Image 1 (cartoon, rainbow, N blue to C red):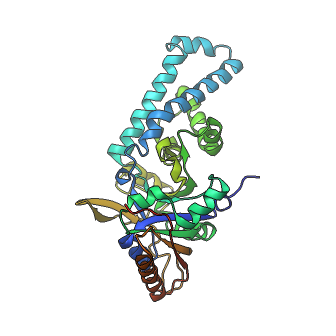
Image 2: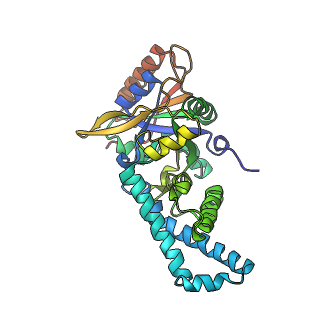
Image 3: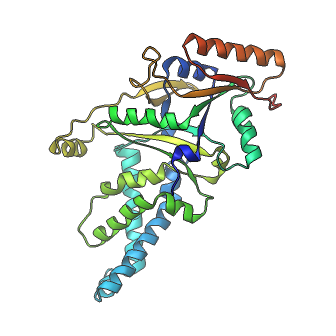
Length: 343
């Protein structure tokens, strides 16, 4: 029996700085950042460039094999069109071009991503230590004495996301899943993306026979895969992410399709923050869903204070966090990392 995401990853770790911690506590929300502004320069593109061709080639070959076995004249048709390789390569190239265009130019659905890290997959002893003290590579990213890890209960977090999905069901397509890395075995990728791969394979058959030319039909299936696929270099993060794809009100064809189906599409507000002098787009994920006043808050289990140079500073930071959460009625444990990192 397949385990739920909460069973596989019972806790989610979100690393942030002091400003981010204050913002999350006070707003009781998490920001999902536009994919182009994350720390992976190949975000989304890694899948489209490195993984998609092999998936489409495999799907295409399997489909043609099945078709040849069913219809004797199929091989003759394939030969007339330049052969199997030409047909499949043409489909791969067209699919890549169209989805690069949709993603980068037309902005049919731009992914916004909120990232979390887990201890799943680590050896038991290591997992316990990282859960208690955090991941050194993350503490390094926040420099001297400015890092915090907010630990969420995954099961309760999933319940809150259901409320977000209900509130925004006519405004976005969203999903919550763990990341698959380029170094993971092929069977894991096939297992994780089975439903989307079936959609892609079925589309290949219809496309080959001229019944379906609109590659938008498989866009969300491709995005499910692309938004969960990352370079092996990020493997130690064991990432779990919320992916939000706002519906594109500016896209006339999409808007007309929704109108014909009688669906009123709402708009999700894109906000911005400054980073290194540049504007970064984001979506306030739990806006209107969580509220301290309504006592519907984020499921924060504990907060880990990052490595400090001495016990005096450690206690000072712990007490400051306790005052912050008490002021807003948040009940969570506050601990400190014992990793001897001094920057």
